[in-house]
Image 1 (tube, one colour):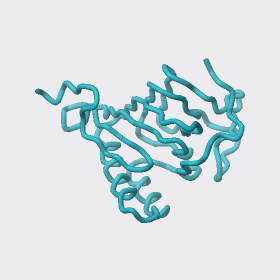
Image 2 (cartoon, one colour):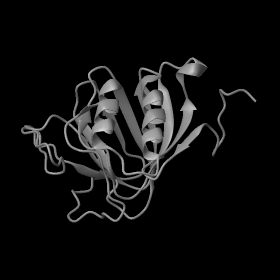
Image 3 (cartoon, helix red, strand yellow):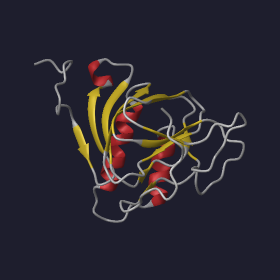
Image 4 (tube, one colour):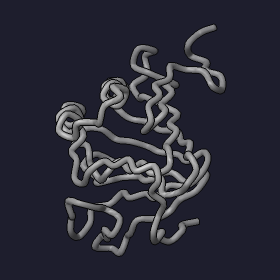
Length: 183
């Protein structure tokens, strides 16, 4: 079968304790957009960040995530959950069928504050930058040793990821106070 048709459960898969990423469309297939199915475990937080050249699209297939996609009035370096925009935008809890589009230079983040994995479709333009990013971060997470935060920061900067707040993975973390649900 052609690699242009990818059935459920198929595709190149990178599995770590912090994420499961299945490649669905890649630069090697001729796609200008990288498309992935991502399983986000409980307690995973990307940390607020932005990309100067990339644009991204997230679509929640199962579960719910806390989402941020705006420039806050004040960027704090430790946590993004309390950020607010000049227009009053705040972090929202979004469920199945929700999407988030992220233009270049837009701070954004997501966090799974539930006790269940979340499944989402993730698209990134241009291809294949995020494909290489996922490959390299999977290597860092799969060593079995504690992940070196400085190594992650250096790696992320090579792939147009400008980190604002730390990426975190706290599997036992559940939201203390959840942001309002957006329907």
